[in-house]
Length: 157
Image (cartoon, rainbow, N blue to C red; front, side, top):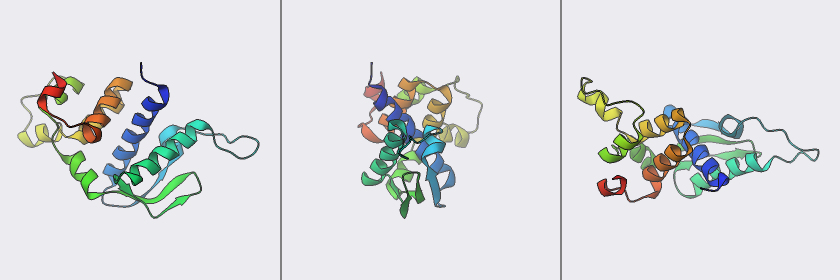
């Protein structure tokens, strides 16, 4: 069983990337509460560990070259965030067929036009499908395969 903070990290990353992709190439404010949920500060005005972990995940995405931003809005958001070129290209790329089959939420629709079939096999579609499923293991696999693993057909058999 994975550590819960790692599963939350993958979910935060997936949500942030999906939001940024949906707005691309427009810059947006990426709010922690939109990703991790409502946060109530303590009596000293400090955010919860969950909130700070999500904020840390957003900063990490920037440090690792997946997104750019102009500034932080306190510890609430990233101001004017946008995907980097390499992250956009990766999210738009087709995923290996074996991974698509493993994460597919519905049976393949052979009658769909080829262009639609291609869109349904991209990494961004896999992230969206994994988030929709709510499955931590699917979300983790989709994020890992999109950015952290050397993906090959053999990896998913």
